[in-house]
Length: 192
Image (cartoon, rainbow, N blue to C red; front, side, top):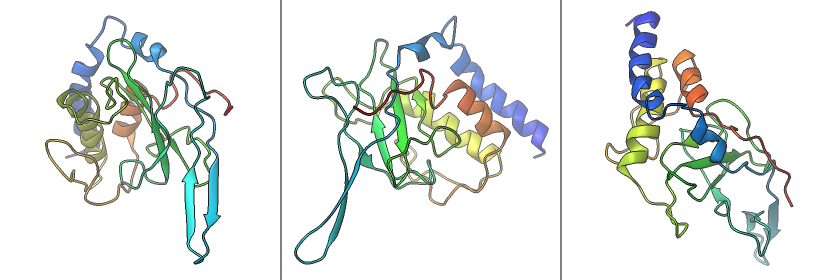
């Protein structure tokens, strides 16, 4: 399939996303800004085993807007080592922020996190797979990667969490996806 047909097909996939609201950008402004960086602690035990942990940057005593950082090792966000996911905001939307090995926020490209029309985090702060997140956020991302020529398939159909092989190219379809699911729709905030 030539590139023009791919772009037209992907645009057809975006129509439902863009039709979700009168102003498709309005929900993005409700998402909490991610931290610019997270602190990484490296420790060695008596046996010489090195352990790397990310420190939770959420200020003590304030409302939790984000889950604590967790390791991420997948092909959806190549180069990302840590991720944080926001608690859902009004309307059930969420936000994912990805960080490199040094705890620096990845600000652009497929390695960065994205705004999620349907949050993967419930009100108790647990990550739960949902049909809404799969259909509104994950599958359009997968299709965009495939239409850009990446020979990648999801690891699971019902609740894809990874590709079976790495992405090799970010092209116009993934660029369009990132325009409607931007990594930083509300800017950033400093680490406390």
